[in-house]
Length: 340
Image 1: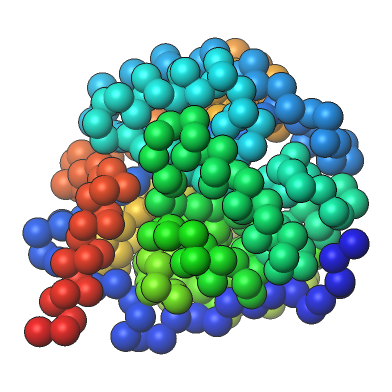
Image 2: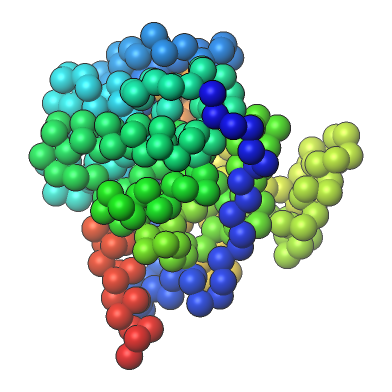
């Protein structure tokens, strides 16, 4: 069992660590997908839950995103990487030349197993360093074998970044981490506290961190990262301030995030000068009944309507889609520029 350490709290990045994108990069967005098995989100975690039936919808979903000009960064976990049918589907996806497969570590279904299947140890960053490293090694090797290329991007399942994760990724040759869900706090579940980290990509231990974009909107949004936590301690305060248009915390995802709120967040992010927006969703949401976010066909219709409206707004704002390669190249140009 992993030692119960104090929650990991990544500090806000130093000003000189924030990526200064080259002008040629413009303002862009990237779509990340947590490509994973199906499991009961309300039940205790179970290593036997490794079904991948929702992958049947992935090819059609990829066509929709491709028609919108949006490549996918597919962050694949162990049940997917070890399922030949899912691998074949994803090989067709990355054959578009722009989409790419990366890594997502769900500790409870990723061997070797040396920990209980409880909430604390489901955050891979909470595991002993040797066990976290062994799981990462096994998953990285499985993905490289399945797709013929070592993965370059990583996301810790449940956003379970830990104090050793970045170093382990650097040793494996990863270029990108996207485990930080900016402005969120998972301490109650035993996970990390990301409240100090904003949405700006930054350099960390030789990698580029791409936080999942979170934007505060509302009249008092300028102080959102300080006010939100304080308001959370007052019953019903957050819902009241959101309803009154004072303060809302908005993540860029179609899952449990109304599109009107997401559009306001995108407008605010672009006005603030944020140059890269990171969107996300879970692959089982592509088929009804596998996640709390898409329970039925009506929920799936809302999911796709969300993207249709969002792509229209992004196009109007001049925000173009980016591939993982686009991001890595632009970050490298930025790094070179800072040394001139």
